[in-house]
Image 1 (cartoon, rainbow, N blue to C red):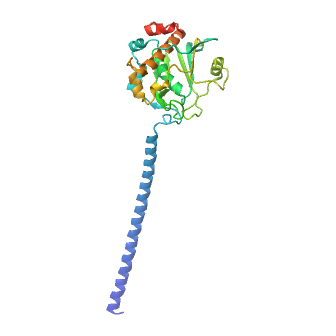
Image 2 (cartoon, rainbow, N blue to C red):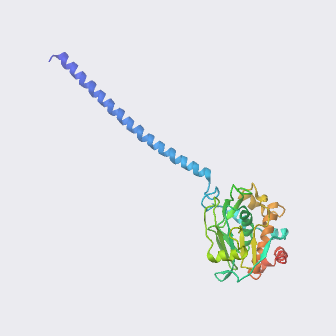
Length: 291
């Protein structure tokens, strides 16, 4: 083989080697692009799920399963710490529809029992949970407070309220037993016991016409329905409602705290007017005469 042939053959081998090396580099680049692209796709999908979750908020506040949105401590303290002086300034207000109870007193843990049966979607329950929380807080500690909204497809849609589902209550004077039967989207949540249904049936015998909320104050008094028009809460946030409670001139305080005074009076009948500092206050003394 001549020198020219050898040079030509060597050049061909180098060219083939260079082509193979270029092919290997291209393959490595493709693999890196595929791996990087897959990672980016996964990150985009995860980010999309996070954004959807954030836009929906908590499940119960948008109509899903219930736990509610934990209210900030500042908001919770405004609900559970309405000054007695504010409640006294509001006084009696309109006389609500209480029913005289009957039967053996309800008790739990050796204390008179306040039984509440409601539903998270219910706009009337939404209205009444605020004064119930205010009143109960005068006798003990209600915690934690979770916020939800009533059904967006009912009257007084999406009313900001509380849920008593998974709430705790400690009091030296009474036991509070809440039963939230249904979530905001009307799926089953808590079933009343046979004994609780028997109490409910005593005052509303037809199960097809029983309404929410229902509250039995140890069978001394019974509350069926609501005490004030939920319109006063429309368009308000949890924070706005809670902040308004300390102002006796605000329509929200007049409605919520006025109802709370009546609920406080009914609880005082359960507790034999204990504690006296609550049950002998001017507003409560005034409402008890009408119960």
